[in-house]
Image (tube, rainbow over the protein chains, first blue to last red):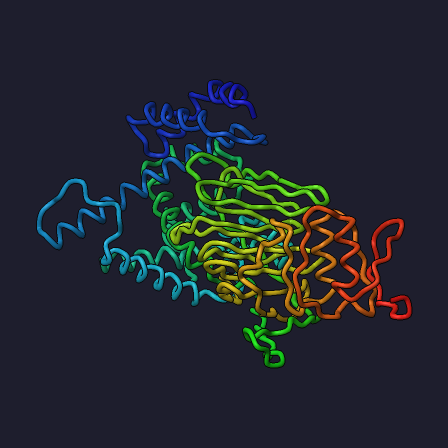
Length: 172
Length: 323
């Protein structure tokens, strides 16, 4: 898609995207974020885009997810640092300390254990959904099960992950 | 463990599931749900992040039963290094496919494009800082603008020279399997239902989520589609990827393999008579571009008769009466 083509779609849908960002939690910062987003999108080279509006929404959603992740990580850094030194320090390095790496490994182990409990088929379906990005219909057809089975198995997996994460956060 | 959580989290899970589908398009409905209650956005963020962080664990879930690994016993004692003969096999289970998704900030999960070479043509593609893919003739690779750390070898042969990054491993998909770079330089062939990988420098992990075979320099692996096992063998590390310089190095390789490699490098279709297809060849074939001389030398070198036909060149058992 030419950047002109994408730009046209962007401009036409500016208000919708702004509304989406606000709803997603950007609040007052929505305008700035939208500008930022456009900046980076117009700089990136892309091949043909089948659904430009969906592409833009997806980019906005990814942006918000990355922001949330960054905020969470800095919160964790701050609290870990505070616990160890009793003071807040600005500009902590981005490199994971061996402490944080240990915690990350523990978290993963907890997730693996939780996933081991949900059963083979739910795990397989979850993997195909998350890693291979297969649609639910595809998975249902490939495994010869109903759509509602796929949906219900996926929910089991997500619940397991949430509970594992919750348990980890409680311990932290 | 299987029980429903509270409505808020169940709804957030529902939306996470829907949005994880690359084809998701109902952004108006998603916006409406987000606007219905300020807690919705946060709940969605919590589920999404938990799922993203769990992905490395999900990657290690086996897609199917892993197959047994076979290392053939060493061949007769030789003056130089110990070598294992490469065997050929048949079997039953189909290989699995693992995708590495690169969720860039900007855009769709993937933005693929293909690069192909004609017969006997070679091409070098720079993917990003320090990573190049060199394609041999008659080969095709699919790359991804959104993810420079991913490549699929559709057919033919490619030598990968990879900038190693433990936090973001370079992934090659081939014939339904996955190779994960753990070092630097490796050669991959995908030819008529066979996959061959050999490592020159560093290391490669074959199907990290399944058999998880680590190949160090000088090691190679062969899998036939539908085979029940994965065969390990040795390869001359210095000779790997030698086809780039027109130098093909073999140790007890079946003539069928030599013929296929030559065909790819020269662009000349080469057939092998069935009775000598599995005859092992040890030696080096130098293709300096002079095709006429190459084919003239090939007979004595491989101990075959080289018979030009209308559609190809046939390698047939050497007729000693003529020589």
